[in-house]
Image 1 (cartoon, rainbow, N blue to C red):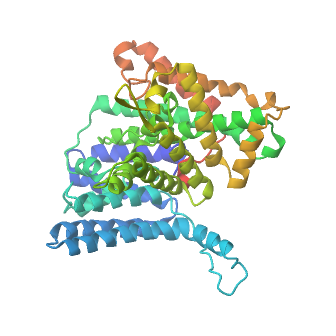
Image 2: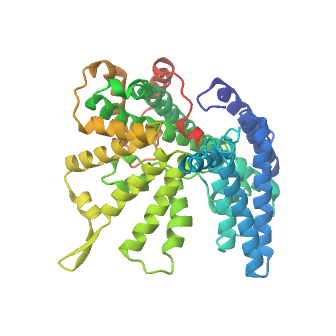
Image 3: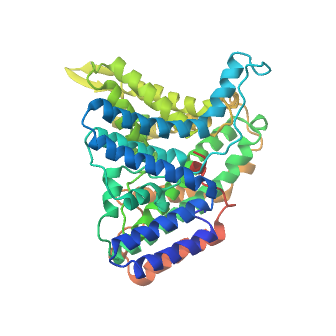
Length: 477
């Protein structure tokens, strides 16, 4: 069920009415309703995968209890490894098995050999990469003593399957989301209104900006051999805004929907195109994923070791390569991560000036805005080429055509007047950058008639100018 679908437009109000009327002031009743709604929401994609998410939830629930209950380190590690093995195992089977088998047989020339491995005819369950990381962090946090396991199975099942953020995040830590299922939740009108505004903003970014920009991006990337340098660079830069508005639009709708039920989800984006460096970009982009790999991969590698620049760089490359691979079973995603790691490691090169330890990132932040915009645009556009291309051969082919300065004869035909919505988006988010979203606080600064006029303008824009419906990009991950 897509957030930008008619079905969700019916599903959400029905669940909300039942939630606040039937379950009012009764936490257990509310949670039961949320669990049923979440499983129904997920089951519409493919009901067979409901069993997978249920089994994953039960394994991590009982693993958490046993980790806490165990008296010996070896027993604690056993249940932790069992949780890790299960979560990474199902992720490998469904998402990466065919990729690695194909690469292995190709590497050793076993395609037609009797020793060749057969691929699996399976599909990737929606949201698998998100909820496995969410439950995996639960087991790891219990093992490290950061949180205590819950004894309430209903609450834990809700934590794993909470439908607003189930299929594409934010990736919530148990310490943030799980306690919210224990608390009494009452209808807060101001919070409810803010949730609706956030949903409106998310739908605008997804349906008007992302889906419109996708027309030009898809047209150019469908035949890169027919395009010139300017067209290919233009499409790659547009893709950055497409994927930003697509994914952050989803996150806004998810966070806004959670607000309607009295929950607070983590912020996942912080206007990434205002970054002055690649390092800063990854602090603003898909924040919950970056924090997950920082906490569970990067820090454990450098912990209790000599924290030299070289060792930190090694940890950085491991983390960013895995972040790339997390996005999909394709070498393009791995190179996307490696490219980011190269640029971040360069920006972190340490040196001394007048006794002060500085890095290149420090000077990038001090540079004129025009230079920073040019620097960041070139690098993020390059990384987007890897992310958007079907394979590495196409990625390097496009990069080669761009740096060859081949004339773009049909460039004017793909610019599109509707793409002017991007400058509007940038200006609006820039001038409201201190807020969680552009509509926040509008009721305190704008009179009611004008405020509703603004809302209706955006609603009409969504209905009138929405691009062809596209599935959310991150659903495939």
